Each structure stands twice: as structure tokens, then as C-alpha cells.
Length: 497
Image 1 (cartoon, rainbow, N blue to C red):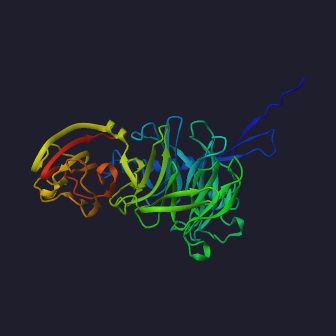
Image 2: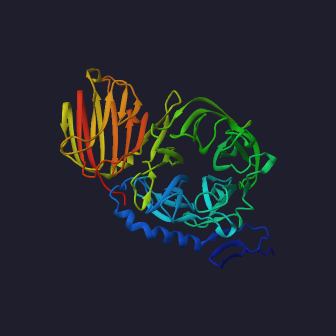
Image 3: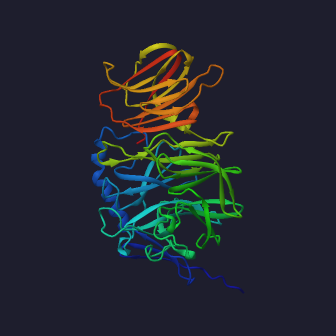
């Protein structure tokens, strides 16, 4: 009779470090989870929550951590009915430093649940920051995340910045709440060192992202440097095994690279996005898995604001690509610093140009409504607020300028003006090229006001801008004006918290 041999799973708690492994297999994977570090990070955030909540400029329906500094979105994915969003977080200060990965989840990209810190720097090993990265499914369909291990940099540390390599992190539970590192020393033994294959990448590799094509899995990395360290050409690696623990260098995927690259699939086309000079740059083209090369066909900017910084994305069960982006700087923030733009559904038009529309689920937040049709001339609307959604359609633009004045003072002497013309839209100094569309030759403008943040979507998201604004707190009026005719709808928006 054959006897089955059960694998014995053990859990050890040593100095606050949780080690998970399999006793029956000598080469079993051990994942390292530092509960003490995560608990201390939570305490650091909690200390500042009262200050953040009291700030009248803090958004109420844009995603923002409970307190402290945030930057790049990282490792976003959709699984089990949840959108998981991770982001760079300094739990101990309101400026960049001591970077961890914050974590939140949502069923609908509208209301969010804050979760424990997912990734922490292993300071006992000399790691100071957990830099940006992404999520990917291995060959068995299991989710994992990768981050860039960083030593030094900034006012907190006297040694120069060093990018140690890419570190694999895996979930320790089915809900993706608790995560463990696949190495006990991310500084000296990262999963993917920065100098493998003998190529002189130096200390500049960072911000891993992933793509799957032709039955293969690839990792693309961001880079900063001169020609001696790879220039600004995007290095690409290919996985050698299903678990994605072994990689081989395949060369340079494309001749443009910098921060937070992303490769977003659209059938036979790919949208490559990276950030060097904000807003992010995009390139539409094709990717050949045999050569690991990307060929660009067109390009441009993903937004019209220098405050729209770096992106990550998740693909849901309907095939929608949902984009998350970091907005910075939130100039007058107290107790918090920076936020995300509203989640956007990313599509490509027939010319291969991206369009971004706010997720339609945001309509759940609508409250009090005021609307009018066939407006000619100017009218102050019978609604006020600094948390509003506005949808307006302007027709007959050949008759003159039209638009909106938001955050208008009671006497009309101050306002932020969104001017609509036959050739485009000007959002208080930022120009968005647009042409009248349809039988009525109209331009549509979709505006979201949220305390110190404004986002404007023109003609269904063909052009977008996200701006930080600092009007006087008492300026809450809305005015619409039209040389032709216009229809306007305004809703008061509820908080997501």
C-alpha cells in the first residue's frame, strides 16, 4: 500500500518577522513578512490623520491616503471582484522619503477601503526605500508584485542613491492583504540584480513593468543615465520559467525610457507610456516577442498638465483598462501630500490615439442637481460648491467664445475660467486642442471639482487636463456663458470616505 506524504507547513515568528515555508521540501520558498515594520508605519500615518482631516483643501472623492506623502501608483490589478491599488507612501513624513507601498481596494473604483502597508523597506539590511514596480500573474495564474530596492538618497540618508535591483513579493493570503518578500536581503540578494548579463546598467534600473505576448512574459524597466549606462533606452528581460524567478536580458525594447513604464495591450497594438518630462508620454505601436522590440507608429502626451505625473493600470473582468495617475504637487496640503486622479477608462481610437474618460461608476456620487438647456448669454447657476461635477455641451461656437467660470466669487471679480472656442478649450491657461463634433458642431466639457483638484475631459476624453488649484475657500459659485447655445448639468458630489 502506498502511503501519501503530507507536506508540513510551518510558521515562525522571530523578532516580528513572519517566515512561511514548507518543512518537507529543502528548497521550499520562504517569504519574509515584517509585522513590526508595518505596525510602525501604521502608527506613523495615524499620528497625522487629524491634521489631514482638518485641511479644507483635501479632496473628498479623489483617492488619497489617510495622511502623509504619496507618489507613484504601483502594482495595480483586478482579482476576485476587487481593484487593488498600491502606491508609494512615506508613513513618517509629508515629503518624499522612507518609501513603503500603501494599499487600498475597491469594488467599483469609487469608494475605497484602506488596507495595511503592503511593502516596507528592510532597514536592518540597509534598504531605505521600496521604489516603484508592478504586478503580474505567473505561469500558474498567481499574482505577484515586484519593487525596486533602493539604498540611500535624500535628506534622510547621507549615502548616494543606489538601485539594488528588482525584488519579488508574493501574497500570504487569498485576499492579497499580507505580502512577503522572496528574499531575506533585498539589498545584496534582490530577485533580479541590476547588473546581470554583464551589461553596464550601473545603479540606474528601476520601476519594473510586465507584458505578455506570444506565450512569453517580459519585464521592462525604467532607467536614468548616460550612454555609458544604457542611455535612455528601455531594457527588456524575458522570463525563463513559469514562476518568473529567472530572467534573461533581451536587449533594448525601445529608444525612449525613464520613470514608471507601462505596456498596455489593445489587440495587435500596444500603448507604451512612460514619464520623463510630465505629463506622461505615450507611443502607440507593435511589439514583436521574437525580437523583444517595440516599433512606434505615433505618440504624444497623455494629459495636458505637468501635475499629471506617473501611471499604473488594471484590466477588469470586462476588459476595460483602468488608469490610475499621481497628481503632484498639492501646493497647500497639510497633513497629506498629493493624490490620485480619478480612475480613467483608457481606449484607443481608429488612429491609435488614446482617449481617457472618467469611470462611469462615479455617477454614484451625484447628489443635488441643477440643469438648464438652450442657454444663451451668461448666467450664474443656482448651485454652489467646491465638490461638483459639471457636464456642458456648447453649440454654435462660430458665434463666439463660450464656457464656464468655476470657483467664482460672489461679486464675480474672481473665477477660474474654462473657455470653449471653435479650436479648443482653455482651462485657465492650459490649452486643449479640440474641434466641434457631430451635426450640431458641438464641444462637450466634463468637469470635476474636488476641493483643490480640477479635472476636465473634452469630447469624451479625447483631451484631458488635471490641475491643482488654489482659489480662495469662499469662492464657490458657477457661471455658464455662451455666444451660441449651451446645455449645462451640475451635481453636488458626495465624499467617498
